[in-house]
Image 1 (tube, rainbow, N blue to C red):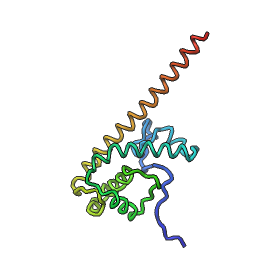
Image 2 (cartoon, helix red, strand yellow; image 1 turned 180 degrees about the vertical axis):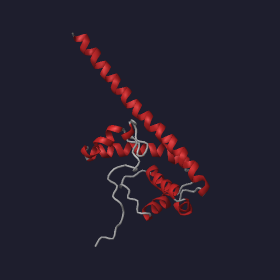
Image 3 (tube, helix red, strand yellow; image 1 turned 135 degrees about the horizontal axis):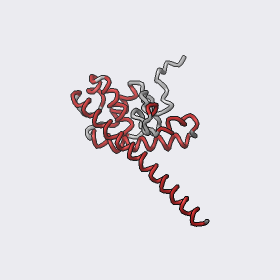
Image 4 (cartoon, helix red, strand yellow; image 1 turned 135 degrees about the vertical axis):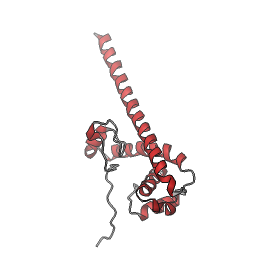
Length: 162
């Protein structure tokens, strides 16, 4: 009998999707709305590309915010709480899960390896959420500005051919 009670994490879903309310970027997992909708149709390579973008954003935000974190300790803490990580999870992803656990229960802070005081958890979490959503939204906007630019270029090229 399998005694492993970890909850499978098949998606980056954080369980508080805002795309259903019309957001272009989910406030929970920070995937683009079309990624949330089409996730189950994507190939493993597409999943990996999305995970890498999301992890890169976590690295950019959380590594500088948590300079005293002991990543080996953080990883052990996260795994001890039965959080399932992808084998290629970034340092930022591990920090994210530890901070998220501490945000839900500040008493975990001492054992987390984050190197912060329990009173700092809520302000850090709030600032993290503000920064990561801004970065994800900028990434979304840039992707669609590029797509619009390419479309405009193609339309102009087609008009010139006529």
